[in-house]
Length: 338
Image (cartoon, rainbow, N blue to C red; front, side, top):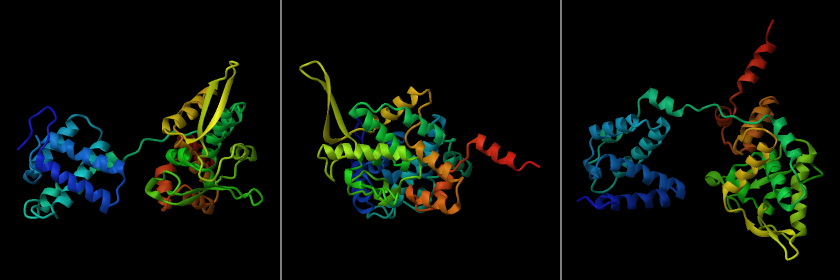
């Protein structure tokens, strides 16, 4: 029986979805964001089929559902993710007691796009990124008078040096920075125990061999925090509060709380790159910059950068980050003239 109140649902389907939620969260160890996305995709399918019982779905309904999403001009990337989530769900459902004889392979196999649609869904737009020289010049023009200035300069400097993911950059702790100034072998120990890390993968994010003044911005900020009694488990990029004192002077105080929102980090990048007349690209674009710079070095160096960025397969680095800008392609081809 389907509930016809304003918020529609099918009680039988809801019980199945709860079991599936527990399965992908506990058995498959999917993170909260992935679990939520899976359930959202399943509900989209229910809405498109008037909350029919899951076991009563047939191939025609699946085909019509996919056609309706395309007719609504939803992006093929969205449709592809939606269909993949539904296929995974129905594959699981067909293995459950009470459904083995109701959900056959033929039904599950219909959750697919055409070959052309899949290729279009996987196609990536060219990812804009800064030239390395523009990043370094922007950092050098940043102010460093106040505590907030110094912290923000260290944020962008560290991102230039090792290309962290935004959640990693925000949640880094004092102990995750490993400095060996004598050996010039500095890195961030990216650990899911201390930081918010994609796929909970541990790695060494080594500093790129850029100018010493860029590294100094990070070293100096760490020294500033140590003077303020920051310990290993304290955040490397904490919240800084600015208040007017009784004498009407603006005073800053450093909290031992980490920045709570990625939006705060993004605003640091946006403000400082726009201040020098450059367009705003997300901090993740620094990873593209590093890869495109590394491509000009030796194959061994490129492989080291790939691992430092957290890619288990160098093909990922080439395919996702290594696309050359058109101007670079032109320069390379010109060198072969004659």
